[in-house]
Figure 1 (cartoon, rainbow, N blue to C red):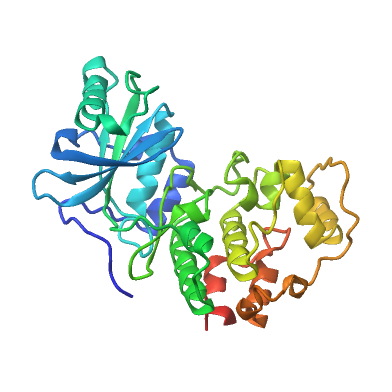
Figure 2 (figure 1 turned 90 degrees about the horizontal axis):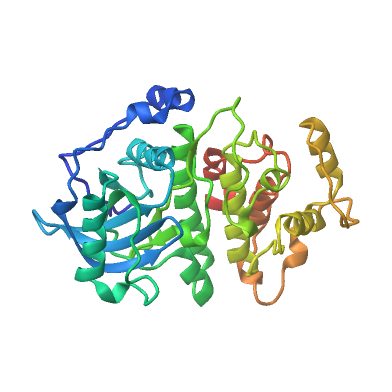
Length: 357
């Protein structure tokens, strides 16, 4: 595989599996020190993204003009920011995962925040909307990533529809590689979707946006308000808080199904309850009730689809998608779309599936 990550020898973060496992039960703040970074080491050139909790810019490192991506995190809890940085450092050097090269903590005082707003408003005023031009933002930290030299994401490729089955296999094999490495280190992404999968000019995959990432803890309850509706696993929709890495696998399955069946999306609910109905209409109620009983999950849902058995996915084959359908692809989806998260295929097992051989 072509190596496309930019590595910086002055800042290497290496964690053993034992060390990452220790982070599961310990306070992540105790393991994080990033006060030494300096925002003056970087310059900004172009805004490329904006979300509820962050703004993303292209820029470069002043010392050597190396291009970078800067993610300014705003109005978020410090422990959440710390966890994202810690996760990125643990994932340093792993394939198909965005690479952190620096992290800068913003002191919560007027001068520091004033500098951020001055940089953004004066150096690149065209990036701010009319309503935001005079708004002061409470920045907490900046994460600097290696530049990937791409603006394409998996969603762009799906929308254009110009892809082959061979290319689909290549993309999703790389996604499973990234997740297998993360999951081995006890890290869940929790927001896998096509917009968070970059594709470079050589069709290499980069999994980005680990802001909702979390360390798996089998005894700790986790928030179920994670992920994108169409990609949410049943356990999230059922508010089951002891979920694990398999929520990422379900989300990958949703993307893969869209590419294979050319659906948009496969499960298209209006809200959490309706999303669950869409899933039940395909996977049936028999396995669902067994799942609820096994994990003692309380379940209240009106208008439950009267479908007892799961459908055969070959029923979704049509003239538009038939060239993408294989027995191996159907079998992989059958192993992904399972109510019981403990029985769902994992990333390492998926890589050994016949679909990728």
